[in-house]
Image 1: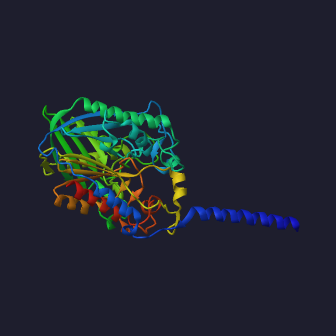
Image 2: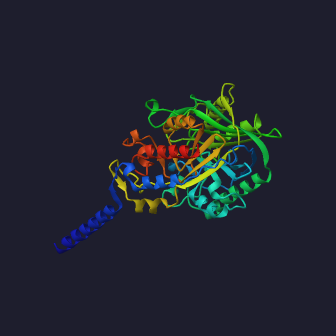
Image 3: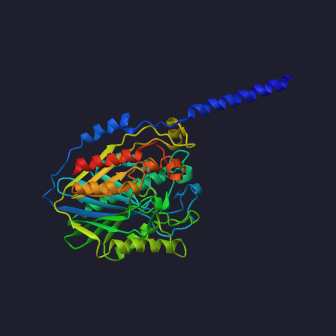
Length: 450
């Protein structure tokens, strides 16, 4: 009998301890409206201090470009689908690159970096913040984006979650990726040439779908591009589209750029001397997978996007002047609170322990009448149409891209926040109202930079 009493006391103590641990890790969702939160006031103060620079309004652009092969010498973990647990890729289907475009208007310089990666890893950005100096181009004047391939180099993530999405951490990989970006910027600066700029916009409604809610939701069908022609006749294009780079399925573990690689190669084999691609507002947006296998589907997806991009009726606006302005600002948010259930969330300290803690920021780059805004996560295509129309009332053509070097998960339309879905539950980390809040953030940048 005495033994049984001791046994139950031990069991009771263990259960109590577990309950206390859970209580320190779990809480309920804070649903305070964002306008009433301290971070909202912090953002308004930060954006109020942005100064407009129109010093290049009568100048002319110079551009230079480079690409650096970042294909590893031997297989690394594959970043992308969580169900792979970071398994190494089995073969190289096509090489992966960092592509860089440097722009100079005689008063200031900016660089645009597009990497064939799942995201621009925060660990790489942390290195770049010290590596990028005036000798290259300062970090605040570099605009980052990724193709968002789910079949590219991993090994760059920290925290428990990285074991699922990017595999075991490898410092050498992080340093190699950072060095490739720095090298690309230096090489692009070496061959600058005067150029004219045009904004291009085309619609492709048949190669994109709303993967979150299907036909209930909207899509962002615009292919947005910045195209340069140099004085020597060379043609350069940077394009962005919202369909996720997930044509290759999770069971096919090969190194590849997915359909953006096929698109870029085709553009360079045809009309353009240099092409770049950045994932647009890919949150909630999926590709149309049609073909006999993954690689046939990649070709079909790329061909559809290219056909729309190069169509005779695509919009093309010549840009006058050479305004060039870069903005990098911290992005205040509420404390992270990822959902465990629809009602219970992980406390912020536990989240930071599991995922790591890195700065979050927003980037904007105005090039003539084109305004690029880089978001730190999978920003939903459903949030773009109103912003695009608003920018045009201010004389700007808006290009919203994802994966600017920070990562806060998925930002979906607020009307879906209470749905038990992957994007709105598993990958929604910073509480409610972020769709509306970040739309307002982008509107503020449009107002300041127009």
